[in-house]
Amino acid sequence: MASNKVVMINFDDSYKTQMLYAKPILDQYGFKATFFEVCGWVGKNGERQTWQDVSALQQDGMDIESHTMTHAHLNSVSINKLYYELGFAKQCFANQGFNTTIFGYPDNLGSDNKTVVSVVAQYYDLARSGSTSLMFLHCNGYIKHVQGDCRTFLPSGGLSYGNRYDIRSQSFDHIHSNVLLSDAQIFQQFVQRMNSQIPYNKDGIINAIPIITYHNLTYNNQVYNELPSTIMVPMFAQMMKYLHDNGFKVLVLNQLGFDTTKNVFYLNRSPSTTTTTTTPSTG
Image 1 (tube, rainbow, N blue to C red):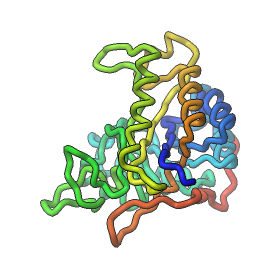
Image 2 (image 1 turned 180 degrees about the vertical axis):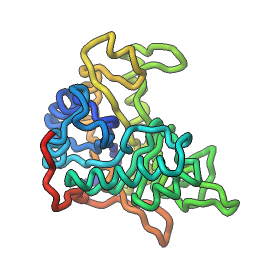
Image 3 (image 1 turned 90 degrees about the vertical axis):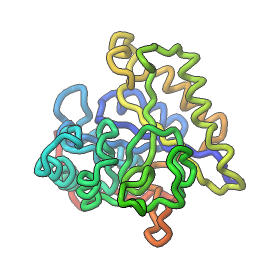
């Protein structure tokens, strides 16, 4: 019987802890995830992954995608810098053996900017932003942003809310409005978010997908409280166990395709490879 419950797990910013702590938990349940790497940060210091790490992730079936060269805020850079962050990053990954076809906006900035989107579209097939707990394959479920399909531009000429360069996801933050959430509140929020897809998905037909983005993982309370997006390792483990025990199918982002005739997303049965013929370097 086809599953009506799916989820896509993303990781941003090339943290070494994703390899150290998250991957063994993902492996425990046979889950695969999409890793948005910052090309200029890989191998930069002990806090970030090495190219060997990124290569090992891909060889183990993980999806490797682009998160710029330096994690720049794309709304506030020059056009030359924009091409560097997007186009040069694409080449940077290719030089290391990775064909990145999906882009992730740093801090979810730029997907509502025509100039930024026009450059993204030159190098990537799809792009992921944030701020919404469910992504709709036909872009027709965003209550505050009425759309009939996922075309990039509205009849008015403005950018649509959901489109191939604005795939909606949401980070998992433990601090909201300067309030530190308890473990119970965090887990309850996670469960609610994962199950919010149920009214939209029936008989194995998927119309809505929660895409959840993680960043740093830690066992250290001080590190945990430095950034809202950091998660404690036991909480991450509890979340992954919930997905496994409750029959969620975990997909990677490059299983999304886009029908340019109908202007809607669709799901591929298996992930596409992101390998090129270049051999990753050491470092």
